[in-house]
Image 1 (cartoon, rainbow, N blue to C red):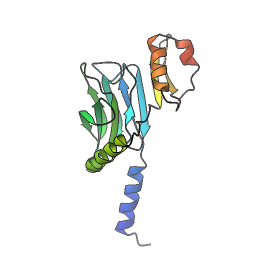
Image 2 (image 1 turned 180 degrees about the vertical axis):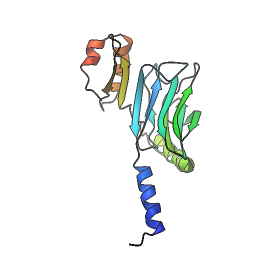
Image 3 (image 1 turned 60 degrees about the horizontal axis):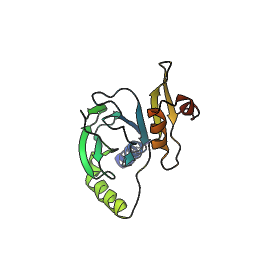
Length: 174
């Protein structure tokens, strides 16, 4: 059986674009630890963080040739930082806060930025986090699914700030 180079390149493109990366925005200002909201996607998705999160950010297992970025303000437009793959990377804000995060394959950055501006001009909204990790009163770490409803992440952040662990316990495990 003869294997064509073009088939290998097409397969490599497909597998790298289908890869999902988990990334998180932490309340911690000095390290990527503690309570965090996270997103999991195939890249080029602007993930909006609720108030109180994004002072540190971690991107898990970034593939080679990719980068994770943080932004301030509305959407993924006001650049704050970038980290480059490969591997798990942490950014510590030291007081600065990323309100939005995303990751992507580095060669695509210019076309993604143009598409993001077009989406923002058209009134498109960013994605909400998909999960929330927090420490229970008994010291165990729990990860819950953030519902797809608009504002669900902020509602969970408010419950966490109020230390309403009974209400948080009602959310589905991630």
